[in-house]
Image 1 (tube, rainbow over the protein chains, first blue to last red):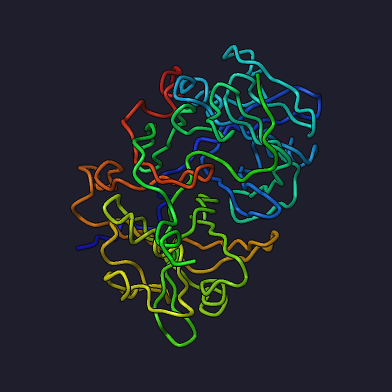
Image 2 (image 1 turned 30 degrees about the horizontal axis):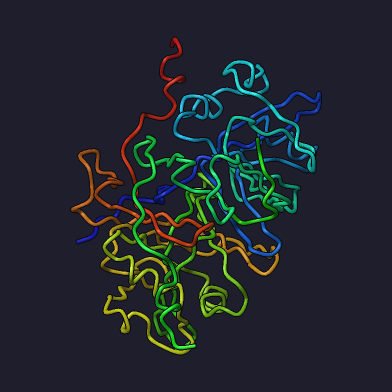
Length: 190
Length: 190
């Protein structure tokens, strides 16, 4: 039996995306966002949503670029901090003791200590309501060498990403491997 | 040391969203999508991306409504099936033996056996590249009573959602509770 709980913003899992930008003064900033995800395969694109009063909103609008850094579990406190405080009033990288590395291909910094980074140039802004969605073309993905698997791809269990639970506002980790995807397709005769 | 692996569509975690629609003949369909996520708090909104040749693309365009059902781990095979085959050529609900329930508030069906359902009306279509993003206003959330916690909210561990790993194209489960979010905010003096 299903119960209605109203118009709530709940899906599981929700990601923890740390969005890196330079502001108009060139100061690097990092802001955590759970409203986002991959939105297109070609061009490869990712969407992240911000309110208009956020420092990141102005920075992406001006620089037309951002990065998305995926924190490991071990950086939970820093990722949480990046989501609470504003780059308008402080240098968040300095506050948490992490390193802003300059992307070589887009005009934005990323969190050097985080294992997976998407380097993005702005494709579109979509005004929805109190949030505006910034759609970025993923120009390149940077991966810490220690978390690559033998296929040369990032290993989710070595990255140990965070999962955000928007219902209870808590963080979870990633669980166990369950199965390969598209198995029924693989089983079809050639 | 970071290595460039090119412009790939990889973030962790990526959700497994089963999008329910009625087609032009009124036949219910379910299609699995990993390119999506919450995109706005007010109005509550969720984005899901589909290619133009997909049955779901035509159905959402015509009906201006869809649902998002979140499968539990135990429905991995059915969710995977929904992502491989097309509603153009078959009745996928009948194929996997699951039930299409009619939403009482939007013109779309949902997967009755899945524990969490968003009922959405179409707000915007955003053409990005080979994928078009459908932004739906979340008009209501339906939750199976057995997965509600004492606060009346869906319990992520009882729901046991799937995580998709787009790098290796495999499914993972949800791990353990790690910490509350926005803790630094809670610690600030009032």
